[in-house]
Image (cartoon, rainbow, N blue to C red; front, side, top):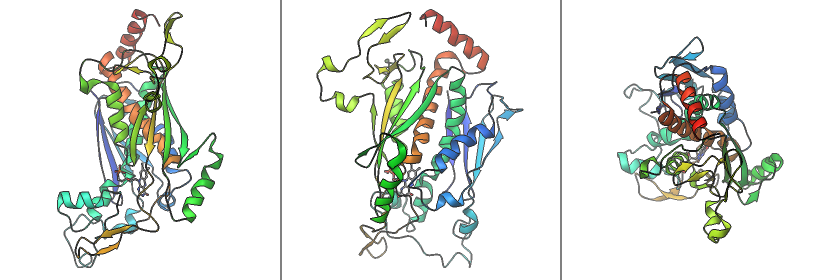
Length: 361
Ligand SMILES: Cc1cc2nc3c(=O)[nH]c(=O)nc-3n(C[C@H](O)[C@H](O)[C@H](O)COP(=O)(O)O)c2cc1C
């Protein structure tokens, strides 16, 4: 139903996206998208890039007079840093200016550098770094913002909070900066855990019928695709594995609608929403660009050297929640469109209300 593509290199001219499948009649403005992009830009643990980029979004198509018109929505964010990288990132064949450019040859363990260079046969790892960079997630946030706008028409809300930075539980956000500064002083990096919750999700989204339509699988895939996410947990999945069944399952009762006493399942049973909040956690690894770089092998000489040190963040967790929210918003929008129709927002709302009447919510 819904699909998107992104394009753009980290220091290229711009980041771009095309989103297809949003129904007609949804109010969308650049200001709404901008609010989410600003959340991704800020936060402790950010490297120098955050000071350079303004991340201003432009809607190029698919919206007329503030409302979607059913055609693909094209989005653009220009990279300000391109001005400093014009020669390196030129799209033109090598010139005298570019022939002296130094190739990046010392891959970072933990990044896509070596695997990407081997896969495509690059001697210059810059070709890998530019696209594997998480700068691309800016377009996912922009896409997610439009999807959240759509979901809000059905009163579905998505938010997130930080659970851990490194080993430290984070009850409130006040200690985050201090923990990250400590890592920075050690020239090290940190990962952490973020919890994402989608509220007011109706039961019956997704499917138990085929493996590739199960919503837990679709959500896990979408979240795992975020750079540096190395594990996804649905509900209390990780702790549940060590408990008895009697401690884990969520008893059903009825009070004008079907409800649960607990929500250990995280709102999903059999790959279908059960009407409780969808609760997920993403586990981000510590970033792999280290101030004290690891040993690696130079691609040309095959000798042991230190890995390249690119300008880098220390910890992405403070600003990565909005990326997970975006990916879940996209997946939920897709399954909602699948169930209730896809062309016209008013038609979809009517179908939605009929369904709620049938299941008596
Ligand atoms: C918002 C965000 C910013 C990131 N910034 C950096 C960074 O500055 N330095 C770095 O080494 N990795 C950074 N990463 C992680 C890398 O992009 C990621 O580890 C790398 O592409 C390899 O992919 P993988 O970790 O998913 O295997 C960032 C990730 C996110 C989500």
